Amino acid sequence: MELLSNGAPELGLSLDDAQLAQFETYYRELAEWNGRMNLTSVIDYAEVQVKHFLDSLTVLPALGNFLAADARMVDVGAGAGFPGLPLKLVLPGTDLALVESTGKKATFLRHVVETLDLPYVETYTGRAEELAHRPELRGSYDLALARGLARLPTLLEYTLPFTRQRGLVAAWKHGGEDLKAELDSARRALQVLGGRVKSIYPVKATGLEDNRVVVVIEKVKETPAEYPRRNGVPRKQPL
Image (cartoon, rainbow, N blue to C red; front, side, top):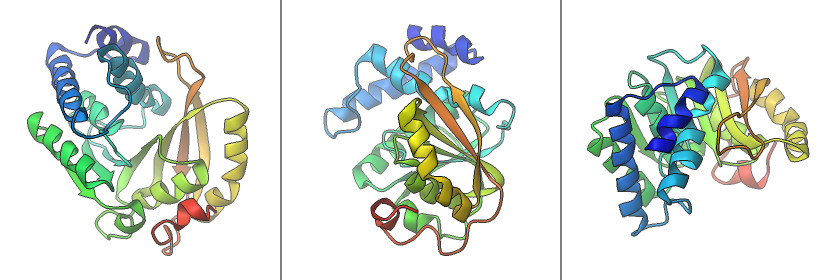
């Protein structure tokens, strides 16, 4: 985990030997399971350290001091566990919910959580459109994570219902004109769902120099009860 260890200080982090061993185990489980199911197209040892592990951690400098050691996080569309599980390994006191609609991927997530013996992690198999209406999940989280999930209007409908008022959504994006257009297209979604753009953080880390940014959205008012809409609608008919 040399690339991860060397890259972490650029994000204001220092990983100890126990944490690096956990990341090593995570990688080995990912590589083994990826031979059975399509978890990720990026599986090279060096690339995973940078493009998955470090990239997941870039949200921390973007958030500044917002994320408390015991914060509640939800990773929507968790896939193979990025960014939620790397953040959990760095912030072991946090409470993490992994939302994944594909049963096989959810099975992998539960396996990794058990293998790493991680407390306060729950995996939910289902769609965000349904899970965000469950009373124990709705409006319950300090931070919603969305990496490679959808364009912003759809992403916001998936994530904002999970967050508490004054909570945040962090979205991994690429900067430039495409992001400007995406932000413009999200104006109505922000207004309807109760969010506002708080900041756009340009990622500065070795190996991630491809104009990556973290868009941070603050929830400034409650999301109306009818959102998210039924399965498939947020993607097919974005706000």
